Length: 341
Ligand code: UDP
Image (cartoon, rainbow, N blue to C red):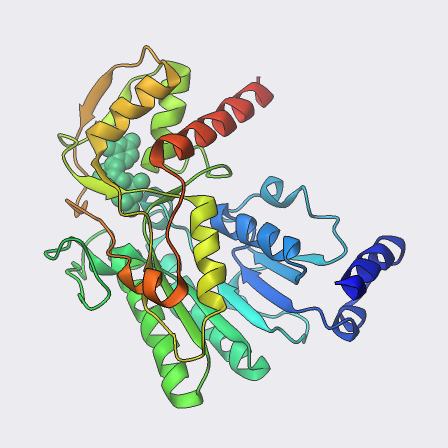
C-alpha cells in the first residue's frame, strides 16, 4: 500500500510510462469499449483499485466526456481505435475486458455488418492478444443470448431462442459466436476466460439518445414529452444499477481459474415496461402522458436473470433497488440537461 501511495505521488510529478508502472508491480488492464457507458465505469473502478488502465474505443457509441474526469490520470491511457483493426503498441496486459460493441438495439442495428465484425473479428483480435500476454479475458456477453426465452427466469444452462435472420441477430448471434470463440480459446489454449451475460443495466453515463428504455423514458419525462411505450407495455425486463454490475465484473474476475461462466449478471427484480414508465413519471413528478407505439420486431416478451450461479461462485448480489437507482439516474440526466441549456 505504502509502495502504491509513493508511486501515485511520483506519478503526479513525472510522466510515467508502462515500464515504470510494471516495476511498481501495478496490474495493467486493457478495457476495449472503455469510453462507453459500462466501460467508463469499469475504467474508473480499476483506477480506483490501483490498476494501470489502457482504454481502447472507436467512439462509435462511446464518448470522451465519459472518461474526462480521469483522462489526465498518469495511470490512464487512451487509444482511439476499432478492435476490428487492432494495432496497439506491444504491452503486457494482465486483464483484458471486451466491452466494445454498441449495445442498444437502435445502435447495433444501425450498421449490422459492423456489429457482426465487432463481435467476431474484434473479439478474435482481443483473444489473440490475451493469449499472447496470458491475460485473463473478460467477455461482456448478454442476456440477448437467450433471445425470446421460453424458459423463465433464464439460467445459464438454457441455450436460448434466437431468430438467426431477424433484425436483432447481428447482435444476438454476434455475441453467441463471441462466446464460442472464448470457449475455444479456453479449451485449445488454456486461456483464462470470464464470460458474463449482462442483463439490462442503467445509470449515469448512459447515452441519452441511444433509444434504450430507461434513458429514453427519463428524458421524455424530464422534458414533459409523451412516454413512448412499445406494444402494450406488457413485456418485462429486469434492470440492474451500473455500480452493482461493475461490482459483479470485479468479483467474477477475481474468482478461481476454473470459474469461466457463462454467468448471468443482472438484477432479478422484474417489471413490465408500462410499470417502468409509470414509476419514472411518478419519480420525476412529470406531466408526461403515456402513448403506445408499434412493438419492434423480435422484441423479447420477458427477461429475468436467475443469478444463483453468481451468488454461489462470486458471492455477488445486487444491492441497489430500482427506485434508488432510478433516482440517481434521474439526477444525472437532470444535470446534463441543465448543462446543455
Ligand atoms: N422500449 C419502449 N419504448 C422506448 C424504448 C424501448 O417501450 O422508447 C421497450 C423495448 O421495445 C423493449 C424494452 O423497452 O421491450 C427494453 O428496450 P431496450 O432497448 O432498453 O433494451 P432491450 O432489452 O430490448 O435490448
